[in-house]
Every structure is written in structure tokens, then in C-alpha cells.
Amino acid sequence: METIDLLKKNFEKRGFHFDYFENSEQAVDFILSLIPEKSSIGFGGSMTVMETGLLDAMQKKDYDLIHRAIRTDIPANEIFLRMYTCDWYVSSANAITENGEIINIDGRGNRVSAILDGPKKVVILCGVNKIVSDIAEGIDRTRNVASPKNCVRLNKKTPCAVTGKCEKCNSPDTICKATVILHHPTTGTEVYVVVVNKELGY
Ligand code: SF4
Image 1 (tube, rainbow, N blue to C red):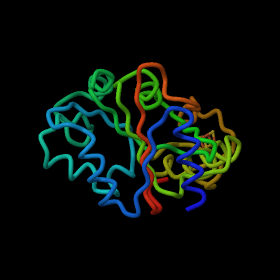
Image 2 (cartoon, rainbow, N blue to C red):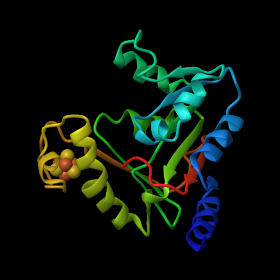
Image 3 (spheres, rainbow, N blue to C red):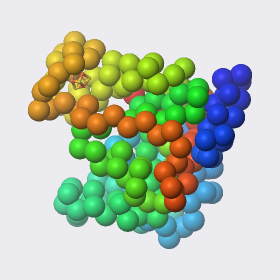
């Protein structure tokens, strides 16, 4: 709990909300209580949102969910644009630091840009496997853990999809085109960091 206390102190000092739950069910209930029904919600590509059951639980509520797996009636490019004007945005992170920073790496940039200047309320949901000590360890995690697994999942033609670690590629297929470190919520945006005591996503 020492690490969680430290995370809470450091995230709140930077202006983030921070909550910790022992299991996914508690975290899902909390997020559902946070987001009023009738809200529109956009999503960053996230295994965590699926693995916690959050997306399933949201589908049983009266939300307008702008998610690629749900809104197959809307072309992908339009979905990305619609997400910027949603009431809420839900994503995971590639790493969160004990100092209270959020690190994400992106190929298209839709996820990091929506977190920076999209919906005015953002939820970052992650498992304890995303906790790192500092920015250097976080970037190492994004390159050597998260990105190789995501490249395999997304069928990208990158060396890390074969070797399982970053080969510092310049492949057109790289998903490491933008690394964004959120030191504070950006102006006008409220960010809720929700951590679950479980390994979730990459
Ligand atoms: S830079 Fe290239 S090799 Fe390294 S993790 Fe990203 S996609 Fe993989």
C-alpha cells in the first residue's frame, strides 16, 4: 500500500483525481457512478477497458458509446473525430509513474490528442502492472512491453512484433510515432486516474 499511498499523494498534488480499487468490479462500479447516464463517451484503444468488463457494463446503461467495436455504422475516421467532442473519454495508459505522471505512446495520435485536448473529463483506467518508478522506466516499458505486444495484436510489420523488444525501428508501421507525458491535467480538463490491483492490458 505504500506505493499506492505515494501514487495518490503525487497524482493529487499534480491536480489529478486518484482512486484505487482491489478488483475490477469495484473500479467499474466507481466509473459508472462517476459518469452520468446520457453522457457521450469516447474510447482510446484499450485492452483494459475490455478486460475489466467496463465496456460491457456501460452497454447496459444509457450512454452514447463512441467505440469502434460498437459503432460499426460509423466510418473509422469519423469515429475518431466524434470522440473529440464527447463528454467523457476513457483510456488506459502505457505507464504511470510513482511521481504522478501518465505516459502514452501512439501511432495515429488519436488517443493522446483526445486525452490532451478532447473531452473535458477523462478516465485513465489501469492495472498495477502499469506502475513504474519514473519517466525513464515508463518509456522503457512502453517500448519493450506495451508496443511489441500491441504490434502483434494489431498485426503491424515491425521488428518488435518478431523479437518482443524495441529495435528502434523507422518502420512505416511503427506505433511509436508520438510519446506523450502528462505531467498535469491539461487546462480545462479533469482527469480521473483509476488503478486496479490486477494485471490488466499491456
Ligand atoms: S519503435 Fe518500432 S521496434 Fe520499437 S517498439 Fe516501436 S514499433 Fe516496435
